[in-house]
Image (cartoon, rainbow, N blue to C red; front, side):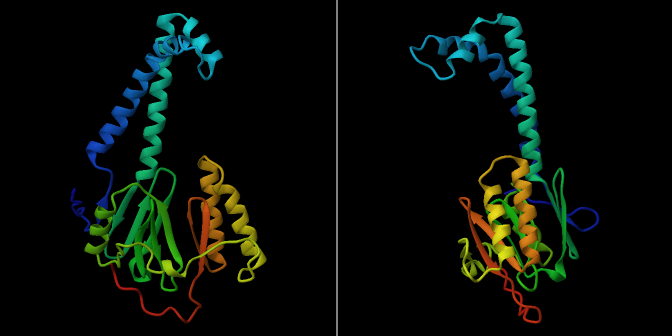
Length: 247
């Protein structure tokens, strides 16, 4: 297990391992370029099949001049590999933890939360989540960083890390449109979020996160499993209770 050494300021920085970043930024573009250069060879092979999907594009590629096709394919594959590396970089991000505050940073987002506010920190799938004193979601950010490294960093600085995920998992209920326990506004937001979850792409993911934040303003915490949404209410004001013990 890789250990994350404290920075000179006393904070612990959890970032992608150097070997993983070298493999990501070097290996993915190289693999893309090689596959792109071999595109015509693959098309020629598929053209010999009695039936093949995308028969028109396959036949077109197999008739193109060899050298320009290989150079063009390698260039397209290289760009595709760089795009995948950029996506991987954004989903890994960097987490900086000290005794006062934790900061989660990605390519296009920065989320911070202060230690005195935190009642629990955990990984929920690929999301790093921090809960507040009323069990509300203080912060949630997608990250591919290893949970063991994150646990070590947060525990080192006194945060209540929960190994088994959300300590309030038993309180979640599956969302069904029209249930009387939720307001019309909550149903509308959850319905819009359900539509966003059914779509692919960064815009849909951004919409889903924005709608999660809007539901948080209504006192609801929401999570999803295989596109199905589950919700729970936060504790009323004045009934924060004691923070859950760390896992």
